[in-house]
Length: 158
Ligand code: RBF
Picture 1 (cartoon, helix red, strand yellow):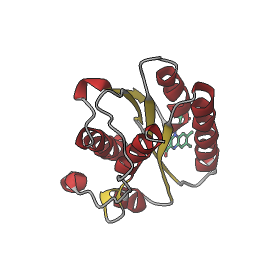
Picture 2 (cartoon, protein in one colour):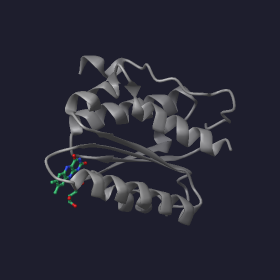
Picture 3 (cartoon, rainbow, N blue to C red):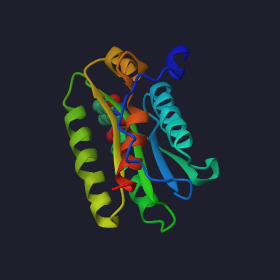
Picture 4 (cartoon, rainbow, N blue to C red):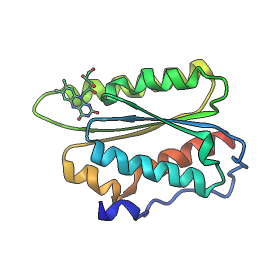
């Protein structure tokens, strides 16, 4: 995708600590995988830019965003993982599925974060249209994968 290399996301990095020895788990939903792939690429590039080692970044996929919570838990329960980044795209349809999925993921990954005392960041793009999702995956509203990675680094620097 031509827009995948664009990064218009801005975030505070002045307080970031060294992450060269930190280990990251990324869990990516397969629904809308053309978009989640761009978000994941943004997250990985951000971790690498800030000094993470490629071999310390573990990427796993789950079928859909609803499964992000358990995927995050599988990663967070591993002692060597320092932070988890969740990536998904939920686009509103004719039914209320998006509300159920989005709320379940928001509550679910909050619980995982608190249970394992580790950062679990919310890279779930929740939009009304496909265009709005694309705008947030390397388009005019930046790349929310970049911001999810930045949030994980920010919390490791707390
Ligand atoms: N998963 C997503 O990641 N994004 C979606 O936009 C999405 N839309 C769905 C719409 C419906 C009506 C259903 C039933 C599922 C949808 N899912 C979506 C899949 C969901 O996250 C989960 O993988 C499945 O419900 C299986 O547990």
